Length: 276
Figure 1: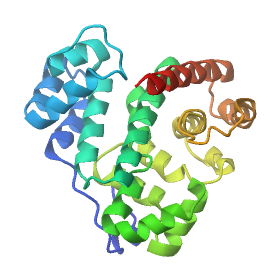
Figure 2: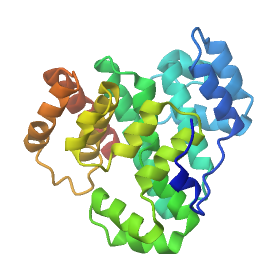
Figure 3: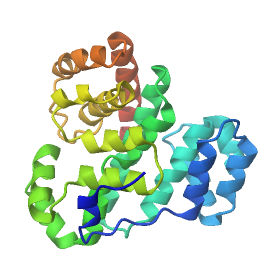
Figure 4: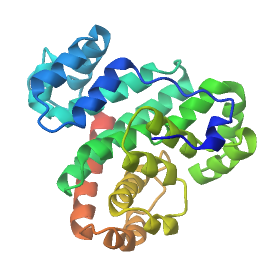
């Protein structure tokens, strides 16, 4: 998968995908991948393996029994969930730490988990949903690593994500959504994930031009962002559902099932965040 020429011409480097994640991505693309194969790839990287086990044991997953190995984590959560967690940890490690970075990764982890759980209930691929949620704002991390001081100014002056994307283009010549999509491509992620990341900041009226699976990912992500990740919690849920109902129907989602699954998952994760 090639990266657009206008992005290649910019003097902004994309971090290389860690070798463990390259192998992991290849495994997840194969039919018949076993638990032993997946655990073996992750456990070859001791730091990554330790971080995965620690995350699986966190309050976010609410396991009744503590797991000791990656293999145990896969047995409780499934291959897709553990593979997604490994990608999350690897993605965080590809960038320098900092408060603004931490905010991005905290949201990415919650978004990916929520999207995956909702997708699972709607017969949408949970791996695609989790990965899109994780990489949704990865382009912001690229811009922070490129010029932290300038990006901090742009970020503080923007009140919403669409305004932020416009300010990024003015300041850097590219939006975080375009950079995030390019990073998805360079890391070997699916075209559906890259297209979903690219179109997040586009007007929702344009989503109809995307393939149905991309539309579904975008709709699930939009609901999670508003109902779970909005720091102000200013959105009125009923207004959110009214906006998303025609988009869901257009994408082939059963709206009532979507609304029920999203409401249930967001309520549970909101409670977990409050308790944690």
